[in-house]
Length: 212
Ligand code: ADP
Ligand code: 5GP
Image (cartoon, rainbow, N blue to C red; front, side, top):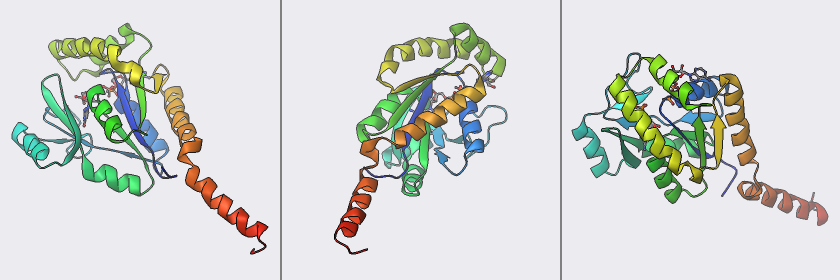
């Protein structure tokens, strides 16, 4: 481990506000974060653009990406495939950014297997009623798809104890600040800063020896 960027997974029920939180976090702290853009076989929603929210793929293209080992992880979610392209994540971590993957729970577990130091955050609205209202209010899915996503939310509620933090998205600004502070605190953990302390120790030794 070293003092470079953290790999962070943000998951949460559909409609819990993940995308909204990420947009605000990135616009507030653009130097510190990089958001991984996933590939998906789902259709773009109104207002979504290629390469910003997702790389939109046909099923054949997506299967080819799997075959050619271009994805860090992938999963199926309510009839579609979603996956994280490898290259960008690696480049941004090397550039010392905190890289955020906004992915569902199966993908989160696969990421943690490969990178055990990954920070896992789970976001929820304050109640089921608020979730349903946000999903309906977004106006991007049919009643049927909203129902499937709520069914999936029940399953996800069962699996989310493996996450490190649960963040409640009630007031958006407060939630964005909470996410930012959790990430900053995690970066300060002793085990992530061992290389800093090693450097200081070596400098101290030189002082003690009278070399400086
Ligand atoms: P997700 O990416 O988790 O599916 P979105 O970010 O699309 O969720 O949010 C779902 C809907 O809820 C959007 O219409 C968004 O504007 C709204 N929303 C998100 N966070 C809040 C909040 N704290 N208060 C009120 N509305 C919110
Ligand atoms: P949506 O269709 O609402 O954009 O996303 C549906 C679900 O897929 C969300 O839970 C989202 O976090 C998840 N998701 C998005 N990209 C990826 C990905 O690359 N991998 C995995 N495993 N899940 C993803």
